[in-house]
Length: 114
Image (cartoon, rainbow, N blue to C red):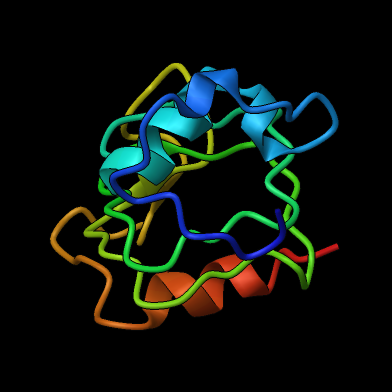
């Protein structure tokens, strides 16, 4: 299931993904819809997920797991949050008057690959 494209897939909740990113309903929803805006990805293992083209503006990403098998290309995103509970705390880019330029989030996330 590494690098599979699930956009528009039906019945993904029936997939046997006990040891993969498909075990998380919120990840399934994002992969099928392409919209991860304001989603919480705390403590999720995203190894092998294909997040190409997914919209992640306002998503919460802390303690997530990505590896070189996670595709992180052409992600649409203005900002993300790396800490809760405050939206001000942990915002990336840190300057509230800035948003990610195309490709910046990809580079930011790729720095955190394990």
